[in-house]
Image (cartoon, rainbow, N blue to C red; front, side, top):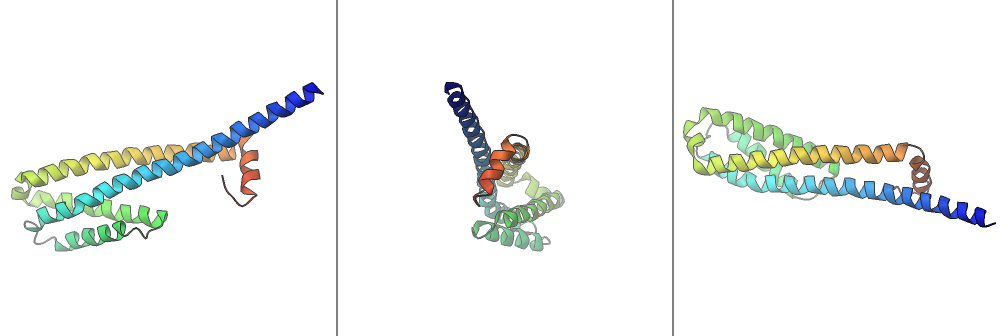
Length: 166
């Protein structure tokens, strides 16, 4: 009888450890996505400064400045789903890249200390966003692998059958 109880306790402990591991992986995915969100907010906060700095120089690129300003307004509205946020981030990245390319036509702007500082800061944030995206992808991969691999898939399936996904 003690052997049966011991085996039962061991199985229960393994299930608890597996379940807790799945929850930790799910929470890590949410945490890393939150880090990306925070970095995107930092980038969005720099956009008005960048627009104000380049506006005087870039008369011909008004449409780019308008596009980036509108995208920022959508981003900080807080009414976006995760998918919409990712899509908008792609638009902002593309538009910021276009602005940086257009800067090449304005030697006075390239010499502006405020612009140079903003450009360095923007580059640092872009690198941090890229690193956070890599961490997010790794966390999602680890979570997906855990949910799909044996024996954690059994615990994950039992949990999701209760309409409360892990």
